[in-house]
Image (tube, rainbow, N blue to C red; front, side):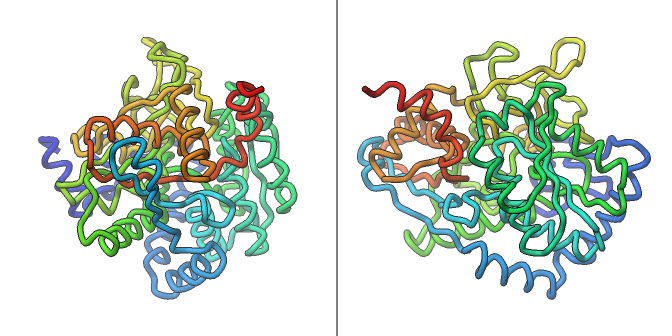
Length: 408
């Protein structure tokens, strides 16, 4: 596109992704030739089924009766009084399996079933996508294998047990950085070995086309619900919406419905980790440069030689050196502002929500809360909707070592 404004208008008009899977300069397919037939088959399946009436009815029924949608929009009154602005929470933590990931996992599992897949492989970082995939596969009777980095298995051990109880085989990844990036690498290798019989159920809005589009469409229910719920409650739109950003699925789901609403400020919060130094954070849009990772051209954390760098975040789900191509376009166009929240301020946000509202957020969601606290200080009396992407039960081992270790 010739200008950022042109790119934004194309996105609003539904012209992105284009037929090549591009969001402006970002996106596309950068994969081995052996995967092209599988991706073409998936793209055709998306075109055929995703907006088909029968498929949407089946998905809608499962979302309502099994997942528990619509999820609540909760006004956080005590938190609002403390922070000085009106804070509303879109409660994805109340969805079945405890996070937004189930929206995508269920939709893709239903699609895989229609495409005749014999088994499912997936990757997971914080474990929520793995749990959601395991649950969806159990619901539909599909064998499931989940790859998870060894570091993430240690810090997210409750979710490892949940996946195994749900019938999934959990495979530890002991290569690479031992986190989400390495788990995606292994899942892709598994898919290459059997690209037609195996369906790769990708968990975020990343990867080769059509995954960023497919995941966006399945997660967009978050923003559509939030927008309608807030209008019903307040007879207007919020001043701002905020979500955490790792690969970017909960955020793109939250943001998509609000992108055309120019009066609504949209803010994505990345993992600032320990600081701005390379290797000390996972803030791709704040500190990254364009490049190719996991089949897509987007913003990446890489050194001067183009080598992907290890990342750091207290939250396993944000600990990824790339980001979805649609987020890269939204950042480039200026429609969404991306900021960072560090480990310590995110942990402080966990404590605040627990003690003031009786809600235990996931560490990923706590980054969005930290961003909302900063926004509230600058916009006294304003109104912001925060995507509370998941609950914090899975993070109890980390909380035991941090927040609870501080208490006598």
